[in-house]
Length: 395
Image (cartoon, helix red, strand yellow):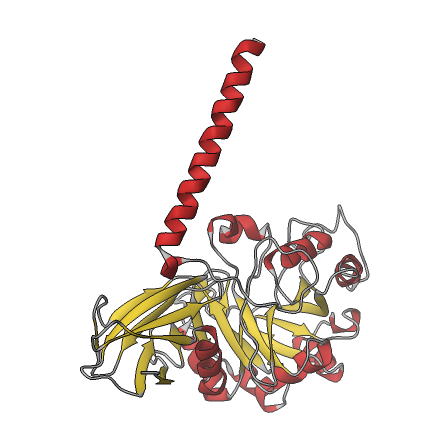
């Protein structure tokens, strides 16, 4: 390339970059309320490129978990270290590589008589990260009982049995947490309706079935949620990823894998397992939060605190800021008698942002009480949580 042309072109590009950067700074200065909020530290030391962040609760850690995924050691397409790398990049706290025990389509290319191998490789790959890797396997049978995951196991090999009930008994003997996989899967339920057969009810009665996936891959099931509520099972949401999470969930463009938020005393396997047996979970899927009242309300409220700015000049219009440091969108509906100066009764708070809310209080007050229905929160089919905020106002 001609050097006489190269130098001015380079200079022009630099000048354009500087000017565009200055315009961006000016724009950010004029739009303070749409600025990005940096999430608080989450206790991770590893580098994170695509973060999943939710705040901890008082005396409880919020731990993002994915307990269902596959590698080439069953019917997946990647080596176990890729599962670890994906989780670290996305800010996941805990994973389990749950290979099919009975279904081994790659066995001619990757023979492995030891069904613990994928877990061992994943655990070794995660050694220099804060990612927790849990041992697990998928018990893969026809209906009933269909597919189930057993996690927190000691040895996958003896769970590979001819009789499915023997497999569950062995997993339970090892202290496993066992849950039903994709109960709405049309390959096993042609109508897409999650339901339990007598065998499932026997497993529940014998304490050999503890949870159920209400979300699997891209699918959410109201019926599975109702089964969890009816039989007092732990709510679980998983990716069940076989290829790459980036491709499957379009993560580079703002998508996210489904995760189970586990509320445990500490970030360690022992307390995560304990929390799962105590049903201390909320599932996050496509900006939806699904959980029981005891855990759903606190995590929603902690994820969207409200900051009082004050009354605007000599008006009776109170300015508030809703601060969303998470990577989830929130959809709220006002259920009080107050109306807003710029918003309708239903509004959205975007991820990693602040939302200004101008409340018409009619007179200047010392305390304002707001109540919102979180439309992206699900307590039960067709039931959303309503959350109160009591805010002190400085006159």
